[in-house]
Length: 401
Image (tube, rainbow, N blue to C red; front, side):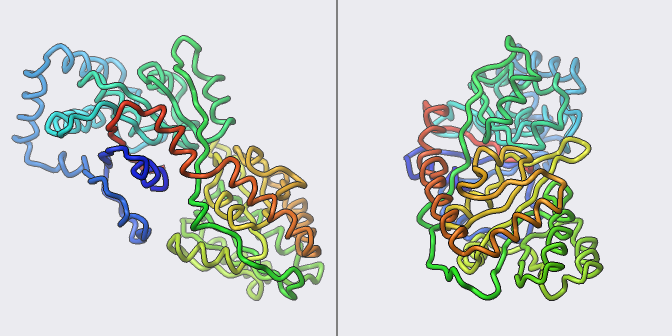
């Protein structure tokens, strides 16, 4: 959403295509500012079968060679959709045919397909490119990148003009697993934040009960089990603090049980999912931000979590771990503290260090804001992305991470 809004401010004409309709009930207020129309391909597949067959027949009649080559490409590579994802290869082909038909009816005719996420959206984008001859590129984020087979990833990159990713660790992964001959230029474009919305507010350096905030999905890779054990260690020292955890996810019941087992009911509150506006208010009232991600046994991990950038843009010192690409954002001892993932004792020690020193929190917070201004401004990021998407307009495929 941040990227789309920033690209629209730069004058790009964008059409947004979502593979499915989100089942989430929380809608960010900034969505209403997006000018681009949103189209849902799953709705096209819900049409009567006769209409869908006609669309396929029209696509085949319009360019038989391209249609048959794309179909044969899928039939000969049924494992292209293996790993993380929700669609089979043939379902991705069906979605691509529907999208190609939509593109032919758009005016002006789009000149690029850019897919967000390397799994299903990128495969659909690849197939649209084969059906239409439009140039294709995609952005890889985290799980979508590392949890699809290398051969499937290589097939996507081989068809792309450019691959964009949000951190250098992801770029290194692409260089490691995709042969050079099948790899286009890989560009790192950090996720930016709106520095006018997320900005520092005055904070009391001598607050009696410092408030910690954490934001993230309640899933294994976010490391909330480690965070709770770390906070139990902090509480055992007698230090006063409060920690509000924002987010929803399948581990919510287990994490609340663990919190109670660790006797943290008075210190830790699970707030639940909240809008971006509410998160910003929470950051304004916080003294430090904590997020302790890890790499799961199946390879799932974060890139650079947006919430870390938002917290730092608000002038907050952060405690985090070195999992994923966080070390590109947080410089230990300069704008925050980085701990080894999966080590609650180290996390507890870092939290205690911030709780004990209001001057250190203020110094880290100033440096954190400077980092956000230098490298994570959404408008600057959009400028770099625009250079990769031109000529315009562009089509953006959205999926689910």
